[in-house]
Image 1 (cartoon, rainbow, N blue to C red):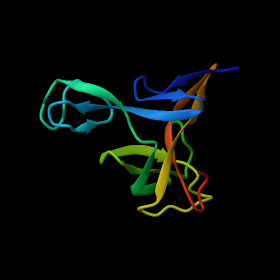
Image 2: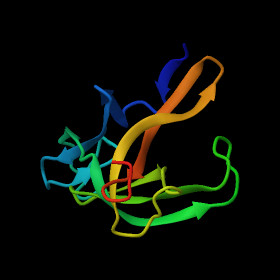
Image 3: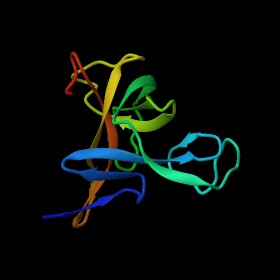
Length: 136
């Protein structure tokens, strides 16, 4: 069995088959930040607390990519998902062939295999269409 490793440490966690994005909240101004940083991008405050972000959001913008990348054959979708916390997260979007995309569509977070390297399965966060006509 291949070992599962995240494509980047500290962006998300996975427990009981559910994924959660890991962000930060500035205690000075309340700004939510993803990914986590040492300094608030709004007020430059240094007092940030870790927060788990919503698993659901709405599709803000997207595009279908027709050029290959190192790990993803075309076509594949990428876009911005607006979370309840008011921030937008850039992500690969999966399940769009079965459930066509449109802005405003409800989306849900999943943690999935992105690609394989030797004896490792590289995982990451992706969003999929949710609700009516979607997989979730």
